[in-house]
Image (cartoon, rainbow, N blue to C red; front, side, top):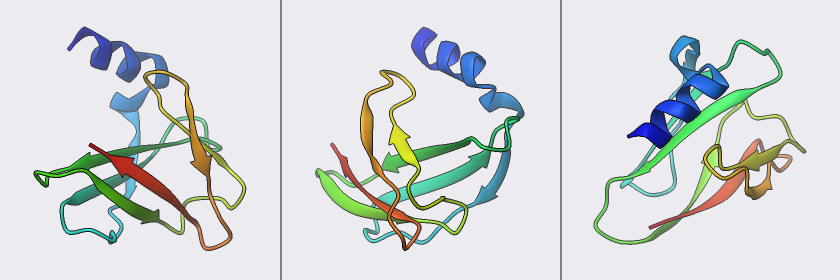
Length: 92
């Protein structure tokens, strides 16, 4: 819980505005797109509610082609947004 709260504070997630809940490629996935205070930064919450690992595609018109996607907990790069405003995600 402390790690979640630290990420929430560091990135200003508590004051972000939800801008999209896009359709996803797997029925067990839920994606929420939030605009952070910095207009050039988004926060995405990606959740897997299925009982199995899922590989899916996240697509939102709010995603900028060429933007880097990273894990806010580890800063590990996860991918790049493609020209269709999408990226692939692997979820346990």
